[in-house]
Each structure stands twice: as C-alpha cells, then as structure tokens.
Length: 109
Image (cartoon, rainbow, N blue to C red; front, side):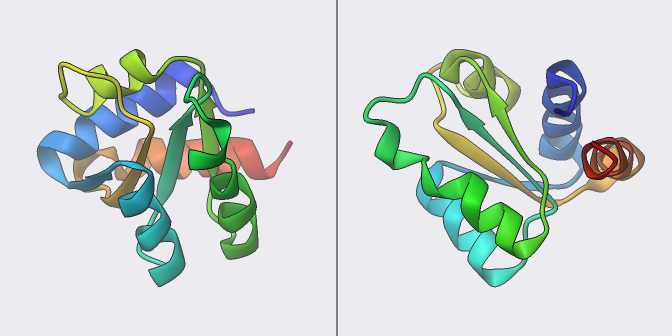
C-alpha cells in the first residue's frame, strides 16, 4: 500500500500547482474519463457505498487508488475545513515526481 503521508503530500502539492477534483462523484468522473493520475478516498465515509466502487474502477483503469483512514484528513489535504469523501488528481503540477514514485511503489506490491 502506498504511504499515506506521501499521498496526502502529493494531493496538497497538486492542489496548489496542478488540478484536483473533490468529492466521490468528481473522482468517479475523472476515473471514467481517464483523467485521474491518482485517487484517494476516505475509509470512514458513511454509507460505504459512496466510495466502494472507486478502488475497483481505479484498478480497471490502472490508476493507483489509496484509502485514507479519515475524511477530515483528506479534506484538510484538499484545502477544505470539512471532510472529503474522495479526491482525484487530474494535473500533477509539481507533484509529478511524487505521484510517479507512489505509482511505482504501488505497482511493485
């Protein structure tokens, strides 16, 4: 599994220098269109059905999908004062090397 701290750092960097999509619907659309470079979802979302499909869809598309235990942590990484169910990185910006490293780490597991 990819390192949670690295994933959150990549999301924060991409937020300020690239482009991200917040929310499970936006993350789903980004995955379906093939725009997503990295997807993260919160493990404490209720009901689970909101994000359950993301890992399967990401695997199908060959995109790394990481579970972050708390939606508040994910929300903070994307710059929200509330929790966030899911996020997709669309344009890496300065996080390109970090996301590449996360992808390589995940694919070797």
